[in-house]
Image (cartoon, rainbow, N blue to C red; front, top):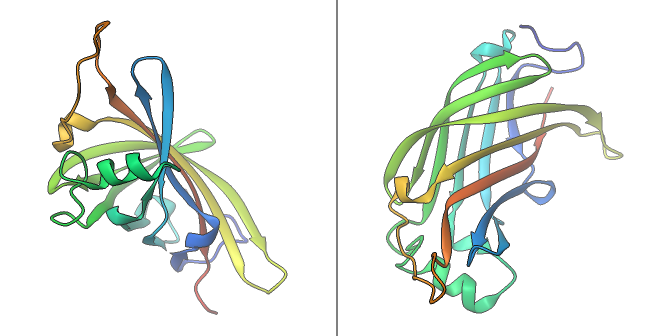
Length: 182
């Protein structure tokens, strides 16, 4: 699989201000709570053969934001991300396979020092040149993980049955990358 004509090879860098690294988790079994990380660095090394391309990312766990100060403090604490001991989440790809109009990106995700393989359903959203002459590419990706697989086991049993925080976490990425300098 080859790159579209308007996409150049090389190392593309994440445009953090135009990207979203978000997740959703079910709360008390009745609603969904969303959170995002506001500070990340990522590179997309595009090869002539797209299957040979690589992506790596590092996310600062202290940048977690759910819009609620009390919840954010709890999630950053020892019960969840323990940002003092584990300041980063990382992802390193190892495979990119075309699946019709989308791709399956697989790689190793590390959270709280635990590394597990994950597969992300990924879409290439195209390329655009912004008003400042910067060439950008958009990528969307999603997957669902078990938070327990990464040592995120804190929970509380509800009086009516069930638990406060679901094990399944839906990860949703909307990423903008900036092309390498010509």
